[in-house]
Length: 98
Length: 318
Ligand SMILES: Cc1ncc(C[n+]2csc(CCOP(=O)(O)OP(=O)(O)O)c2C)c(N)n1
Ligand code: SF4
Ligand code: SF4
Ligand code: SF4
Ligand SMILES: [Mg+2]
Image 1 (cartoon, chains in turn green, cyan):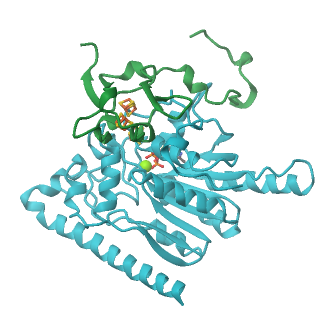
Image 2: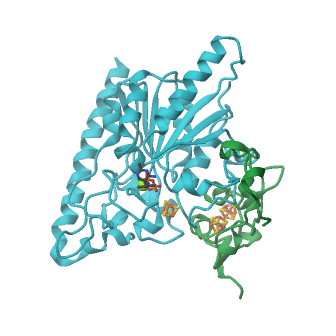
Image 3: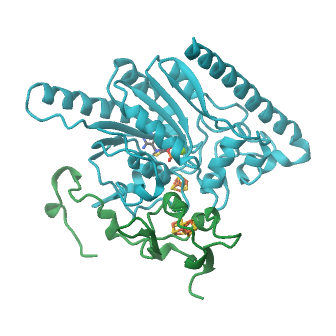
């Protein structure tokens, strides 16, 4: 991150770029990593709805796509709430870096 | 504006108005609440936010997670701040200086910022009749400063300012029922919601935005740090809160109360308490009476609510 000085910041601490937090990647916080098992996925979208970190990607057609590991903090909510198919989860949590 | 259909497949095609890269803890309930509130509608929204976990973690230096105009306000005055914005907007529209784009106004505050320190400005804004919605995300303590008790902290909970030990067994008082206090303001719409019941939550937001005047929503927001629970259980606990009737889902529209989601089977309160470390001491043999006291309180509140809801139904049928 380049150093910024007060002269170059907008007056009054106004942030002019909406959603600029996307420049700050929180994926490095993760110690557990969710893994998507597509064949068990019923496309219910619960994982997308309940993710606190907007880290489940969606295609233009509104279908579930991969995780966004740049931001996913590995909380495991998606895995716990995933109904999966026939009792088989479509998301499992694995230790990061293994 | 037509009300947007609440189908997950359709909603997922839309753009989030709360971005990733925010710095709430992993598994925090508050961002789930915010994303659901903002997702419920396509109206342009301007929000104010009282100091608290949500505020300090969503806007840091030049990083903001908000994709709507958003203003940081002090801990005690988000309702006053947004009521001023709303009044200015109405005035500018009236003077013909801007077009009316049907902008909606929201103040977000934590339970500390709402039940306690911001209560005066909230009460004032409601009484003045501003066309705004106040959303309290209730995690049951002052989490951002290290889990101090608030008047929303449940009975028995262990916090740093009511620590469970030899002197007291956690918080000695029952929680304040702010939703009912807001009802006493006679405002047109009041609701209680949970992010575990996303459809119910979003329906309430949609309804609120079609009503002119002050609205209040109280939304439970699990906090795994303060509740001493797991990082993956925010939604599970948000659902258990509803299923045990600890956090009933209801609305009060023009003075008429209606329970919006009745649990199929009312679960014992311990199902909600047990997974949370803040209630651990209540399960010790010497504190057994506390569990009964907590259950009795929930039962009494729930019975009263059912009566009020039945009276509301009867009134509607007439
Ligand atoms: C007047 C004032 N007193 C104290 C504080 C310190 N403070 C900042 S956030 C906070 C707690 C907020 O609690 P709550 O509203 O419940 O939100 P949470 O952090 O739990 O999400 C406190 C005490 C402050 N910012 N301003
Ligand atoms: S682990 Fe948590 S942050 Fe990561 S995708 Fe699942 S719900 Fe989102
Ligand atoms: S919750 Fe599970 S089944 Fe549902 S869309 Fe996500 S991965 Fe697929
Ligand atoms: S302390 Fe609690 S409310 Fe605050 S960010 Fe962490 S989990 Fe969320
Ligand atoms: Mg709080």
